[in-house]
Image (tube, rainbow, N blue to C red; front, side, top):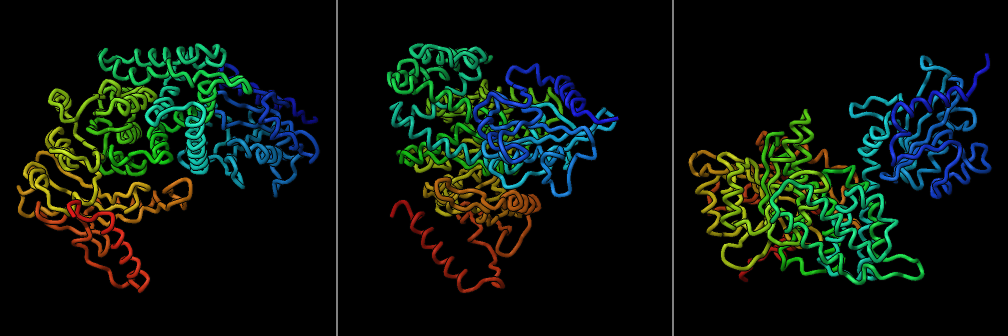
Length: 615
């Protein structure tokens, strides 16, 4: 009996129907051809014979996740599933689908599915992921490192592909590149101020969360688009079950959108307004990222990038945004559980809260636990109205935490009283730096955060190293009520390009430091996080070393390991220096002349950046 490839295609088509590929509005399943211009261009020279257009059996693409496509190739005979060298494109299913994927990977992350066989019992399926711009494909595996050998739902494929390191790294690189383009476009065409730029990004993302706006914005007349977007933002905020006053605080900073003249000015050459172009680009390039990587503070990323390009007055505002890998490190140091309640009294764009939420959700097992986390476990305070709106937008985009955000000073008595009643057991803070005025030292913010926690709570702060090594009366005040458990010296250039050398402090709240004469604080020398400064991108984990370094740090921290040159236990008081460098035993066995010279250079840079403020 001869083999019929149409039977294989019918089996695949039925599987796609069973998995609802044809039911989802955002999905398009095409056979043998495509109407998508980008896909068409990629396949224009992808014929398996070497000449002409490539025609895969099935192509699946999404209007919501535009950088991922699925391509499927079928063969009737399972003996024609895969050749030894994967180079017989016309004769074998795996060979053919990877041939198409190679061409498509110039523009997409490609899930490549090869199927052979005539009935369900004998059917053989192989699945690969060819990441965008990668040189080679990889067999697609699940979270347990088991190879996928069936067709999954689009969402399942999306999830597995999204957490592939190559895909995530490329998407992040593309996001950074887009943030530069976006900043320049906003400056040159939309004529936005520095505070308006990040608000517009977050406002567009909120508006796109509104179903009516998301499906209709491309058809709105240009002169009503801004008003329609503002109304969509209001609808999304109104959905939140929170007091009306808080809703107004969230909405007000976005009001400029509906009256900004440059946003709705029609370009006669393109027949587009700046606002329409911005919405279109953010819908395509940012919205999928924030939908997939909910543990990533996208709003904060754009805010930081915009500050970087403008050279704005970052230091006067005390704005030093915490890198993502450090916010995630805080969540692991705190050893969060699904029942933890996390407080950030200077939450900025909400980076710590997002990382805390991600860690708690990862450990949760039920829908009830996840709903509880969203409704009760994230508490933030932010004084600056625009920054508060950005934090609120971050929470709105994740469907959580909005009711527990407060706009105002963390020292406000009414806010403090309400926050204390929520009984947070974990505090995280990156306070404003170099503020002038009584009671505005970084340690004043740390002290207030600790006072706001329940007894025995864990408080973690990242502050300038001067807070640890210079005398200050607040050090004694803190230790009278709270225990200094650990201090970690972190990379000098962690906040690049801002020239602040930071350290991380860990406290136990409401347990006096001197209650136990034998208590020792653990000091860690965490100067090498594996990140390197890269042109146009900043500090990046270029070689993928961070995860291993992080786990090594955490193991040392939790076991309170003492290791020459790396960590030490030391009894300290308010009069002592709180940093590893003051107490570490030097490991001389591996030091050479170059190391010595480099340390001298590092010390000179340290002195230059962190000299006494009163000098």
